[in-house]
Amino acid sequence: MVFAEPKKVLSELDEALYRQYEITNKHILDGVNPFISFNKNGFSLKTPKQEEVESEDLQEFFPERRYVPLLEILATVNRYSGFLDELQNWQQRYHRKKPPLKTFYAAIIGLGCEIGTKKMARISQQIVESDLDCTVNWFFSPEGLHSANDRITSLISRMGLPNIYRRSQEQLHTSSDGQKFEVCRDSLNANYSFKYFGKGKGVSVYSFIDERNLLWHSVVFSAAERESAYVIDGLMHNDVVKSDIHSMDSHGFSEAIFGATHMVEVSYAPRIKNLKHQKLYIFRSRSNVDRSSWKIVPSGYIKSDLIEQNWEDILRLIATVKMKEVTASDLFRRLNSYFRQHPLYSALKAFGRIIKSISILRYIDDVELRQAIEK
Image (cartoon, rainbow, N blue to C red; front, top):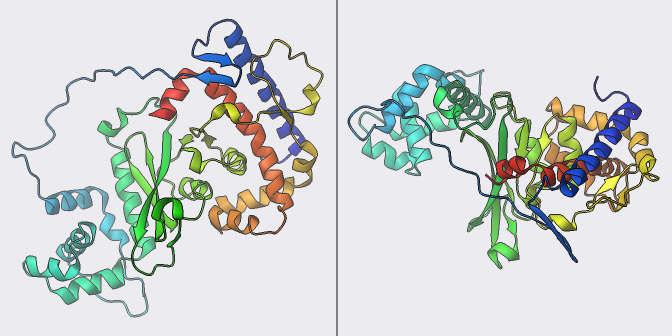
């Protein structure tokens, strides 16, 4: 196992962190990094706008008519992906005959376009409202819908057109962000958030998308909860989209998530607000190193002993998440519920500070990485 021995892992990270300090500061002193400037309040970092690249003309994909019926689109996608095969009756004991394809299409359009099954039955030919309700109630389970969406995502990912948007064919860059919506009716997920809804209640809809514009996961939770814990849930959601580097805004940032994403082998690259105020760390083994010429300096030390003492628990937590026994958001919510900070959570934060420091140093040094994150 890559993470079996804590001393070996920490030794390699110690070397990587020190090397990144050296590289980042050398490029600043040599003028290789002209986008950073210093003042009495710290430093200021500029990110130039990414130049647009003209792509080659694409062949005619669509027929001469300008409009393609939604029913035709759904039927074509199902023909090549077979996503409707995933929508099975959730009660196997009293197995009902599967409705015809047209009923599934009508139900998807009715719910997806916010028409409703009642109105959809009235405006459709040879579709009965009771059949639509039966299809939605017995065949539209959350597990089936997720699996159907995975089939469609897998089909799109194999096509040539979406992949021309990738910055690199060797790694896939994904991102996530949340939107707040006010809820006027009773909901288990809704909660008060004066900042966004005043005296009302609302929810957060957190969506995941990759650089090919594939929307591959979304989740709804209370507007009062932090978004960072749900980042791991999205990354572990399916086996179709394998993220190599993941970005989000400051709401999805935390030091514990830095540590957890490193353990699940995803590079965590958030766009952090007020970057100059972030505290950087270094191992105590480098305390005697001459840092007089460094422009970017650490202000704290890594608690290696705390990490080693809780390493087995950290591995157990990550294994639980990777095996999908429990969601990461549930685990972090439990760890945050203690009156005093749980030792496991403190150790994971201490480990995450290593990864955070390396990530910020790379962010300062690599303008192309900053452009990709901003995009």
